[in-house]
Image 1 (spheres, rainbow, N blue to C red):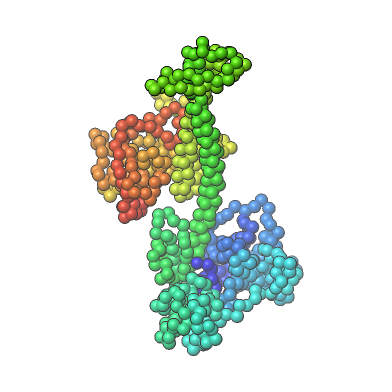
Image 2 (cartoon, rainbow, N blue to C red; image 1 turned 90 degrees about the horizontal axis):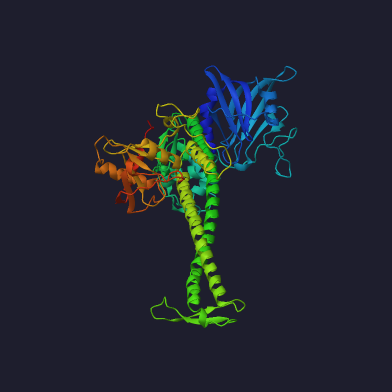
Length: 611
């Protein structure tokens, strides 16, 4: 949900009593369109965030301390000059407009006490933060400067007159139902009620308009002509309940998520909304905490997706590169295969040298390799002898044979690269944190796909337990953190998050008798079930649930009747020069499974911190 005028009013009502009288200690501009103001209050210091970006304009208190640029931008210097050391007198909003005014008193260069207004205009791509002298109504500076070439209505430049954003002519909140009904008297009877609410009343967003209609017991596409007196009364009661911040005593802010594990936040509201009742809800004690958490989680998600996208692009480019190589190899092998017949021609010519006169351009001989003794026509070079023609075809054959040998090796190597890149794609799509993406980034560096310094390998230990080389590398337990789940029987199930973790989990963490699972011939995570000494298999429920996790964390997610191989760790081998996450095994069992959604949901909810 966007920060509409009503939600902003609830936020102003919540924060105004807390911030009134606060002293401004320091001002920072950690991002191009974001200002942080360090406030000194009687109960301690707080940081006020003012954001005027096009994608996430907002204000709230925050505990996040972002890194500042080496030198402060010009607008930050202007704010420091006029506002640092000042007192925040009030925080206000007019007529549910999305303009928040911070009234600040401070002493100017001459020692006179002056009042300044800092206007935060939350209007999408037109959002801005403007410092104004209310006495002269002139702009001291704006976070985004623009002239009449950009906006015909007003200029935002130092020294220009400050004009408030143009009014949309909407009605402010009212407690009088008759006044509220009059807003509909001149409207089109065939118009949807949600559109009327959105266009007629201040502070109402599309989500809020829809919620008013739903809480009134009407359908979301109801039109004005379908509403009788009782319907209008219910609409008014819902409107008054939701859109009157001054008359509302308590709110119940919350954040909504999609009902899937580790999903980013979808929206937030100041009270539970019926339109989101199918979503997962998390309640908060304050609206400020709700907004701060929502935008923090969204920013983490944006950073995560940006990094995932950059790594995905690298992997896709490499996949395209190797796919092109495979096409070249397939064509070369096809041509070489067709040239293998030259050996037969050479032998047939050798057997029929006495029948071939000098200067012949072709010869027809019996093919004694064919049981039917069919005739075959062999082209000849008339300028050389028959024996030289035979030798020429032997050379063609040997060249084709050598091409096949070398090209098939290159083809196998390219196929291995493609399979490895497929496994990286799976790891990338399923990574849920920056740490996991960083591990994949290091893996790409280590494999030469990205420039950079590869991660240091942990030094091997000698028989006496001493390290063979000095190193500051952390121990695997500190570095490697696979997913950890509990089966319905209380047993631990480990799932690798990427190829490096898969190797560690299967070849180092797992004991010889532990059970290992992986989707058959499909990229995915390695799964490990620790077993007790003397135990050969876990219970059936744990085995099935571990297989379900192997399917979920693989390219086969969402498929049915998926083949899952399982074997003991002692059967696993890693060939020399094999890619990370690649293992082979000779003996295994196979389970065919379609994961049940309820089992997966319970398993994913059981994820716990690694040991």
